[in-house]
Amino acid sequence: MAGRLSRRAALGAAAAACLGSVLSACRRGVGRGKTAAGEVLPVPVSGVVHLVFQPNVQGIPWNLTTQTIYQEFVDQHFNTNPKFKGIWASVFSGGWGNPQPQIAATIAGSGYADIFMMCCTAIPTLEQAGVVVPLDGLLKVDNIPATLWSKGHILADSYGGHLYGLPSYDGTLVIFYRQDILDQLGLAYPDPNWTYADAARIWQAATGQNQDGTHRAGASFYWHSEALPFWLAGWGAQYMNAAQDRATMASAEGGAAVSYVEDLFKAGAAIDGEQNPLLLPRAQAVFAQYHSAHVINIGVGNLGNRYKWDLLPNPVWPRGRTTFVTIDCYMLNARTKHQSEAWTLLKWISGAEGDLAWPKFQIQISLVTPSLISLWDYWEKTIVQVAPVLEGKALHWFYDAAKNGYDYPQLFFRYNPLSADALVNTWLGDIGAGKVGVRLGLQQMQNQVNALEQTATPPLSLQQTIAAERKALQGMQAMFAGARNG
Image (cartoon, rainbow, N blue to C red; front, side):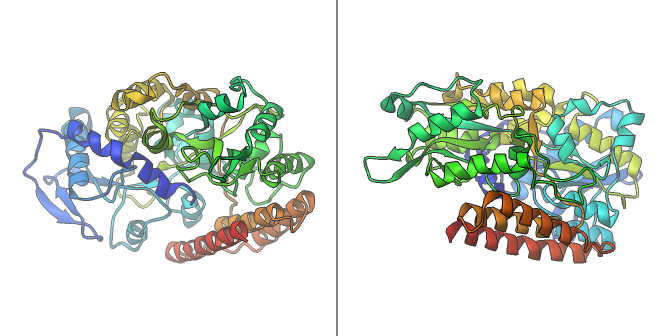
């Protein structure tokens, strides 16, 4: 999905610089075993429950060095902690993505995974396959409030009335902007409480031609199926019903939201270029929506001290402020033979019971934004220490979205999530190209998604589902690229 490759690249250089600081002096002389993918894992002594989990890795290549660093930290802070006596945890295949081959191997009985690190379509896929455990009941038994995490991220990790994942990191969206260009144009910096009308005026005023003849758009947006729910929410529209099996975006409010964005596109005041870190330094856009994982490669690597720039929250839309949030999470495998012990490990990974060793380690090693609301100040201090150029920048707007609950995630339809995404992106492309009007395009989008959802069949096997989802993803990407390039 959009943002995955650039998010990895965004954190690479700075994260690599942090690796040395987290190397543990604890090197264990344990035996070694291999996963289905050929990775080397520590083998604990007999008589303890052996668990394996996939850590969240952003910006760091998964290799033996990374695996060693992560495993040593787990050894030092979990495996030798008397509180967790009788449990031994090993890491494998760190990263992000849609359902991994290791999960299919788990279900087939040829692999393993007690805890998955997942994102995107994994929740509906794995929920329908019956391989993830609802966590809301477990949280209630242990008296752990879901308010430890941002409202939007909990919404993202919930499905069919249950919570299936605990956030692995957040990633709220704010706006980066070039103050020096506004100075040259004689335009005032926006007030942080700017409205959607204020934003449209300043984006249009900042649009023009650069000295080298290139077009300068006022703004660059997130604009596809992943982002559409938060735009609609800002106008009071709903993307889907509560059961997540019917599209509901073709309302008057939905039409107003899409018209606002498309009118800016048609006027040349906005462009769809969310993942291009060179838009701002090349002055191809003055304002650009990016999430917190881009602070390093855009804010430090491409803007730095060469340009005068800062951060702003998204404008206040007609129904209030909303912004996108990433949805990566840790999930408990329903097929684990040790659910109680795996739940203990998951609580430690997520910081649910106040042990913040692992969440802080994730921030230190990769500068990834925190999963817990309470750690946003720690993240800000850490990232400024690593990159002093960020001193004085309005980083708090990332935290503001999580704290005040106006972060809003991508939502997934229940039965055919990626195929539905493909339809949404195709219709957004047709609307943007002027092939169909906004209201008619939204109505057709809604009708076709609903027809697709009504073709729901009993869940496929996990392997069949993964294959179908990947094929649909490839088709979606091709159609989206064609719509935008046509």
